[in-house]
Length: 303
Image (cartoon, rainbow, N blue to C red):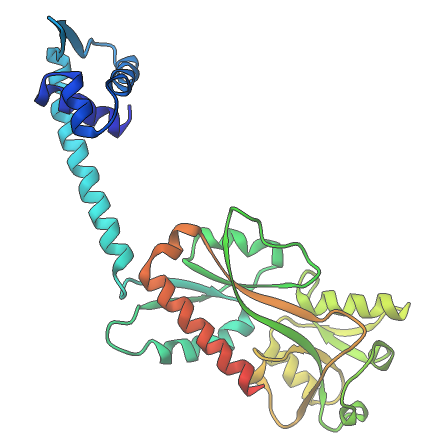
């Protein structure tokens, strides 16, 4: 039982003939007859009967036509409501961000949207393994996600993707570290260092595994820490080196820490906004996407 079938039944009761219904709805008479036949298959009682050359409603048909009027009216209200919702710039927008993205972007985002008529944003942090980011779009309007360049792309069709940044992971070390004087570093320069890195399944650990593979020897990992502020604090002691993202780690850096690019291995990750396609039809969501892109542009310029 489809809404357009109910609408045709309703119009038949009002107009009295299949031809009149077809002309009103701007379809062919055969299309009307076909849809009424399909509707009849979903109902046990006869809905129409022949009256001369015309098709008219039975008592059951009139009852369903009255109900159809209420359904069509409710659908019109629903379409109007969703249209208003989609066009409302102040409608709330829920956002999930992994930890470093939240540290770097949530504050600037709130400041940018601190104006009359701006959307209300509701923020959460979800630091998950790469393959788990798409599933978060079921719970949030927008999901800030990251993946390494060489890793699988986001599932096409399930989520829409708005690129936010292409961010290298740099080697982080104490400013007094012997390697801090170099402009850039190679795999052999860092392979024998003692490291702090993330747990498996996250970008820093994946990059460090590649370092070990290229150096043909395992690297020494002293600490497994996902939180970049803790990583920065350990790096500042001078006892370990780590990997920190060039842009989004800015809030946790201080003069005691130096970042240097690492060559000879792919270290860049893509930061993307993931969303279900229908959410990107909402004006408030698009405004927040614009604000996130502006906040990220400021971070890149400051790096």
